[in-house]
Length: 346
Image (cartoon, rainbow, N blue to C red; front, side, top):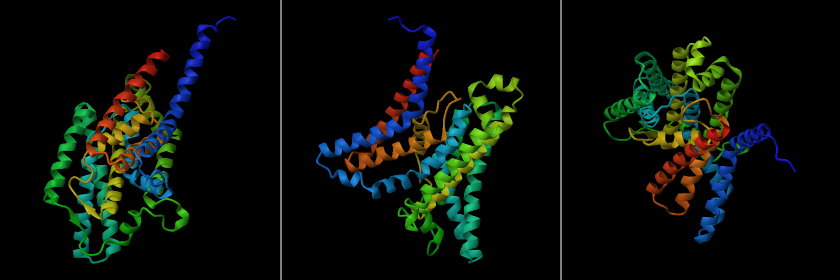
């Protein structure tokens, strides 16, 4: 029996790589769940608590913040960018939201109006940070890594200065929307999962439609695949990057508002280190650090994998430091696997 021609082999390899790229995040999630199930059983820990519906609800709601930020990071990484400031921008958003709410209550006393003003201030703060990142990157021609690393320090300093280095709570009873948005149990029960998780699903649909069916989405992939070619095709690269960074900042602002609801307050270090978890989620979901690749569903599954890891480590009573070692190892391993896959396809 003759071997298939080289062209057929390459075609099979391409189809297999495409199938693995699509199925990879889902298989990874199942593998992580199976691994922690086995480890819990092996150590004599109660497996039913890990596999319970309530625990998976908790994981879904807890993943809402990194998943929301990961949607914005997906846009950036597809276009060849990155944002290292998201952790402290979320923290800054929580501080601004709380200060604005307490100020509005003192001057107005109408909690619904104060809530609206505070939420808009928080989302606006995130969008402003994203806009600043985009403008600095495109106008100063500085690498995204450097600019967003600088923004991390700026956001951290402002948040610490505004908060005085301490947690900011509500002046009086927290509003109803905070109790609703921060709930783990669905209300009403037919929602199945908490409101924060549904918020991620709706945002994922919006971002997915943007990437797949809009000119901005096509330009995003084109810039990440080959920026020079995108310029020759008439794409306004600088304007597109500014829009993408602003959208990513807006999503980070939304995550900060959800963080306020979860913690019932704001803090200058509410989500320190979030950037590592978010980048890992996008990379696990099929995103490339060199641009041109990534998907909405992949990033959502990646965020779930990160939170299953955290939940499983907690159930095994492993130290928090071990989780960071796992995340770092996962980023290196997945990046190496993607590099190997790309070399095989050439």
